[in-house]
Length: 478
Image (cartoon, rainbow, N blue to C red):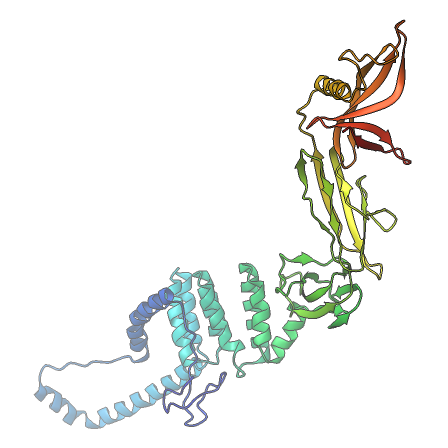
């Protein structure tokens, strides 16, 4: 601010120019529509105030001769009367000044206007009173109340800041002004502004109210640093305020993750963790933040090449891990551990619906995140079971195993090929299982023990067998 008299800079809170001594009347900047209404009202009451302060007495005479004749005859009386009037006027002025040295006149006029429902006029009286009596806190508080009645919250706050932003008012008045502003912000839901105005204040009142309304920043452990393993983050507030946090460097708000208990960070990377405490008044504390670097923490997440979805052909599930990591998996819906089946080679996708869960462990035994896949394998059957049997008979006939299409064999009798079931051969697909039976001349029959498998999709012919673990094996018939 600059002095209106000499132009020198005036520090905030000073009511007099340090250079020339001119008095500075601090009047807040108001909302345009409210200020226009006040200006109009001030203009209408200016003459009224002037007339009230300066009463006039007018004596009329018929002509100049009468006037001078009157003066000549009443000279002594007039001189005495004038002196008497001057004494009376001086006495009345002294009484008036002593009665209104605190601005009581403006408070009464404002209250009368307010009682008559003319709050704008009350504001005008109080604004004028504040100019003449800048130290009268009653005028300032009453002016703020009037602005609130008019719905002008911004003007009300700015008016109260006349007191809070100055060092020339009593402590109790400063505290009351802060409390009034806080009450306004509470009602409007602007809780962050409570912390803002109290943090801006550098006086005893602001310091005391900060302890009541602004929570302390929460405590967070551990501190900044680089860690080789997973880290447990603990955040606390000693005043019972709710805590919210982020781990991506964003400033936390009430919409952020609520802190309820310790949480772990175990994946390699750099983390900027921020936390804030929000008390019962909805006021936020200063934000506390930590930067942590995790090296050698969790194992990298295994990469599963086949996405979840529907499949119609034989598919192998391939998993890729990071250097020095081992992969384990389950198919029963449980979370995998190091005790689960270890992945060592591509896995044949099972027929039907299957659910795989994969996890990787690094050399330190730290796990990765679990990766889940769900597959639905339904082969596209292009060959019927009757066609499968016919293909098999035709092939055996071509190989001279059978003598004719009826299945006749050397030495008498004939073979019959009977459809048994649909089977899935891991890593190979879906097949019709066909059993071979030998029928003697007398009609008795026995199973030969030979089994065949015909692919339901392309009709490929195979000998069907079992390995030592009881799994199906295929050998193509050429």
